[in-house]
Length: 301
Image (cartoon, rainbow, N blue to C red; front, side):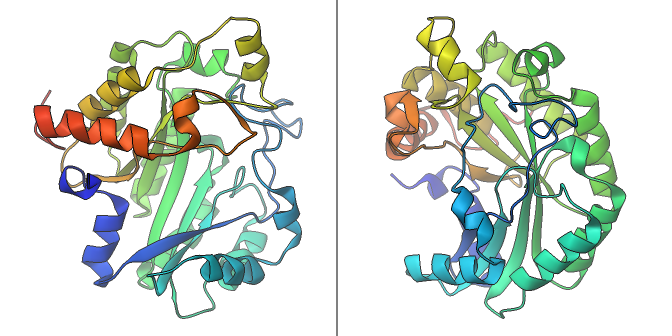
């Protein structure tokens, strides 16, 4: 099944803009996180692995990482530099300026995608990203919200509340920087109704993109220990696909879905086992959308 038939995916969006396939190249630029280095706390969010990314990559210059990623991909000649690992705005703006310049020095890099936390986005960073957008680059600020419910954010040791996200989005809008919001479905203590409420609040504030993830239990995380003690459960694929499809139907058609599921590699992934690959979830979501309506059909609910 082709997700593009039912959802305004990032791939579809980029092909419409550039007339060809554009791929994201994930980078690790050696950032850490204020929820790891003691500024806000230690250990990070309870769902996050202590070794979520390949730390060896952080020692490799950005342009060399890009060259290696290019060599792995086929059927694409345009790329977006994706600063993915940890909190990719957690540095002085001059260091970010240097890294972004290094990432965009080749002509085949047509965009910047920067993943970060809502409480780590000063105006100087937004001004820098706005400058790239004004120069014609595809620019996305990816904000990890996960949930709009402060009690959930406290439970998962997120280190910020919904107000920090609302503030970051408001300032990004003022600078003309598009925001893609990360949401995790299946967090401990959350129902499908709570996920719908998070989605509603995100749409109310305005967003250009959404990235959906199932809750995954990964080795090295605090949740791994909770799971071993029987204190939480991994989501079932039918529950995840049903909730994700309903959120997609409630999303206006112009909003771009950067992802509708996520995966983890062995041996990192503990549960659910259907997250070893993206296809089971994508197939289940497509089946639901085909039967019950595509993106935007319930956007007024």
